[in-house]
Length: 583
Image (cartoon, rainbow, N blue to C red; front, side, top):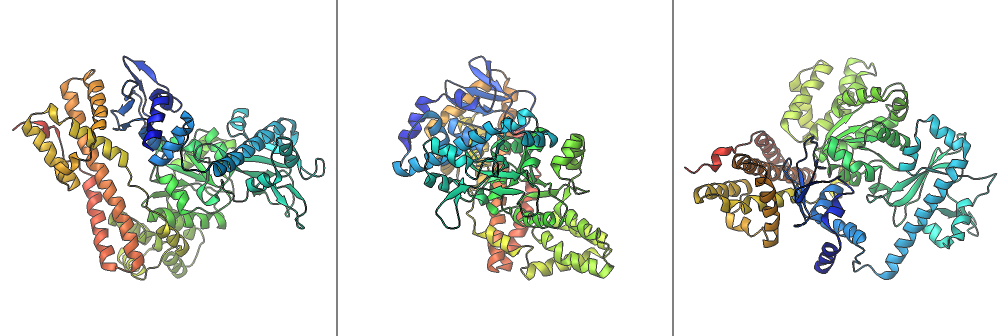
């Protein structure tokens, strides 16, 4: 692996890696831009071609080309290595040549099918008129690679099959790609998609892995949408439609917007909501939630207000609240979906997003809108609202929503609190299936791992710039924050990482007085502390979930107290410039 890393570094320049994501401008021997990892108007993102490093003085992001891909794509080092290896044309092992060839052929056949669908669209008057009626611009159609495929009776049942045969693909490959299916007798095959507008489904890297086809025919016996079957490339429980294009938007806007269908996603992006995604052919899963929380722990659900939509909200709330996410819901009324609202007036959709309410308030309002008698309302709220309060990660939020529910139900807050505790004691959950899915999934790497290492490297690297007294104070602060001896922390900083520190100090001192440098040091120390506390919070929440599942009530309660204390600690930044004064 080390050989592959070095080959990639030899073949790629960090400028070539960063430029597709961020437009860089020359600034002396470095390059600058507005940071892709946080919102800013004045560029504070610096890149050094000489050192192969980048650093942002606004949010502290920094590292080499591998770190950049990990942060910008939300992937681990292994995935970043694959992305850069493909860009540098470096072969990675141990994938067998046969397996690699099979996967490459699958990607190729799906790409050729996409090109074919795209080429058919301009000549399909009904399809183009429908897309125009739905409000899609030519630029949007091209960006999302929307196409069309004809079908019987005019063109038969195997339009794509016949085209791909001329391209040299076999029927076996088409079956593996989910493009054709066998007849009932198994003697013949025909296209999966016929007479449909075609939406390619992309993986995280933007490669086509499947399709969703929207019919243009009327009739209750014709499904409105047909999706690709699961294949070696397409796993519906792991794919969010639009995610490849939404990652940056989620990071920049600091929330994910989840809608129901392809048109909702495409129109939302067209209206400027580049953080919009949708599930495709399945209910929301724990894997989907994991993808979203890589870039933000805030989510807005914009789903239909019908029975199915409310069920989807409950499913999402169960999965997301357990992960500590902040979940809001947009109130869509009148049976209109986001695409319809945006077509009518994009400002109306923006207004609705701004008025999103917390999911617990939404579920409470759903009950209030049913005009139930007083006793039924309270009993239904006990079953359909209170279990979600149990899932909230801290006492402050729980207390807040217990008060909201008590006020709405015209009862006492104490009564609501007692019922919440009774639900907690009985291990009742909103959706048991969802709870099982969450507890079975693998725990992800700690959030902020790259930031932790980058800031630790910086804080240790700058110590020689201070006298012994100040250096000792910083060492003591690091030990308090991490709970580790300074000597052990120093071992975590490899010699090559010193290059990043040198770059950061060099580019900063060139343009700023010592006072500003001191402020940067204190800011970094406080940010490092925040990353450590947030990581402890995440671990505590995960452990609390495991203890709840195992029935360890005392342990779970103790952890809940710890979580509350950690959240309060986050509100205070204890270090000031006084730490840099020699006394």
